[in-house]
Image (tube, rainbow over all chains, first blue to last red; front, side, top):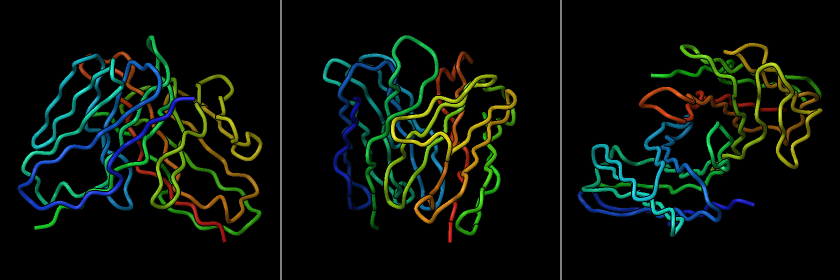
Length: 114
Length: 119
C-alpha cells in the first residue's frame, strides 16, 4: 500500500522567513505533485515532478524530487502572507504512463504571520 | 488552461434521498476522471476511477452500490450518492487528467468541489 507522509502538518512562520515542507512516499512512483488548497476551496496545481533530480520554481516556491530517497521538498523563500494555505503532496500510484488516482499526504497547514 | 467544473457546488438533502453530482471537463476531453472525498481538515481520499464507456473502478472500502458513477461522455462524469446518510456529508472533488498534452503532461486538474450536507 502506497503511503505518503508530509511534515510538518502545521507550520506557523513569519513573513520574510524561509522554510521547507517534506514529503516522503513509500513506493516507487513516476510522478509527484504539489497542490495548494485555500479554506473552503478545491485544489490548485503547483508543480508536477516527473524525474529524479527535477526542480521546479514558481515565484517564492520551489519543489524538488529525489526518487532514490523517495523524498520531495517544497521550499518557501521569503514567505508572504498570501502563501498561507494548506499544501498537499500527492503521488501517482501507477508507474509507466497513463493516468491514475493520486494518494495524498495529510497536508501541511501553513500560516504566515506579518 | 484546463478547466473542470462541478455542479452543484453545495447541496443539502434529507437522509435517505439520492444526490447526483456532475463533473465536466470544459475545454478538453477526459477519458478518465477521478472522484475524491475530503472530510473537514483532512486529506483527500480517492474513491473511484471513472472511465468513459466502461465501469468505474472503486477503491477498497468504497461501496459501489452507494456511490454510483457514470462516465457518459468524454466530458462528463456523474457521482450519485444513493440513500444518503449524515455520515456521507463531505466535500466531493473530481479531477481529470490532461494525459498527453505537450507542456502539461499528466497534470490532474481538480474541479471546485461539491459540499454535501445530509440532514
